[in-house]
Image (cartoon, rainbow, N blue to C red; front, side):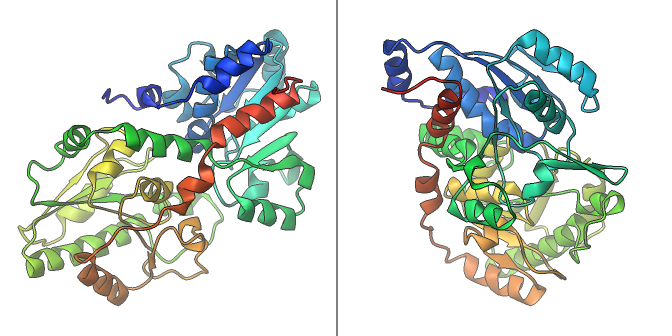
Length: 398
C-alpha cells in the first residue's frame, strides 16, 4: 500500500463495465470543471473525478485550502487563493469552456461559493455533492457586510432521505435535491475490503509494536480556537477539556484492567501538536497508559489501526463506523441539544458526563460489532452522481 493520502484513492476497486458500456454507446466526452476547498468537499467529489476520467471525460478546475492535498495530483486542477475575485474566476471559466461544474459544498470557504455563482451567471450547469448532514443553507449562502449572496446549483446530491426531507423543510426547491448517497463513504467501504491484515498491521505498527497493547485514537477538532472567531454557541467543552477527561479515565481503567493502553491524539489539520502535548504532559498518568500526538499517515490508515476511535463531533467517527470500527462520541458538559449527525442517525453512541463515560469504559472490554446499514445506503453513490451529471449535459444511458 502506498502511504500517501491522495494516492490511496487509486487503490479503489472499481467496476469498469459501466464505463465500457457508455463508450460502446458512443457517448461523447464531457469537459468537467472541478472546484473544492474544504477537505470534506474534496473527499466527496474525488471518487466522481476518478470515474469520470475512466469514462474518458476531461477535467480542469480550481482548488484552495485542504483540498489541494487531495486533488493536487491532477495538474489540470490549479491551486488558487480562496479570496480570488469574481472577475478572475469568470475569466478562468471563460477560458476553460466547461460543459458542467462539479462543486464541493463546504460551509465557510469563498472559492466554492464564488465559482458556483460565476458558473450560474454564465449558464454552466452546476452540480454539488453534499458531504455532511447539517448546515444546509450555510453551504450555499455567504454574508458579507450584512448582505447575503446565494450560489444554489442546479442539482444537489445528498446523503440520504433524511437530508432530503430536512432540506425540504428548510425551503430548498425539491427539483434541486437528488438522493445519491455519499461517494466518499462508498469509496472507503471498498478501500477497507482491499486491505490485507498485513496492511493494517503496518499502519498499526506506527503506534504500537505488539498485539497486547490496546490502541485508542482520539480525533481532535479546534473547538477552543473556533469559539474565538465565530459566533457559534459554546458547546460546554473544548478539545482540551475532553482530552484531559479521556486520558484520566483511560489511565484509571488501564490500571484496573491490567491492559496496557496507548492513546494517540490525531490533531485536526488546523491544529498544532504542542498545545495538546502540554495538556497531557501536565497530567499524572500511570505507566500503563502511554500517549502520543501524531499526524502520521492518512486519516483512514489511522482509523483502521485503532481498537477504539473517540471524538467529539468529528467526521472521522462516521468514517470509522463505515469501516466497522468501534466508535464513541464524547461531549462532556454539553450545554445544547446534541445535533451531531453520528448521534442523530444512530451511527455513534454519545457520552455527556464523566460518570456515564466511566460506565461505558467499564463495558468496553465486552464490546461487540455493529450492524452497518449505512454502507448499504451509500452503495452506488458515485455512479449515481456521474449519471446525473451526464443527464444534465445531454448524455443518455442505453
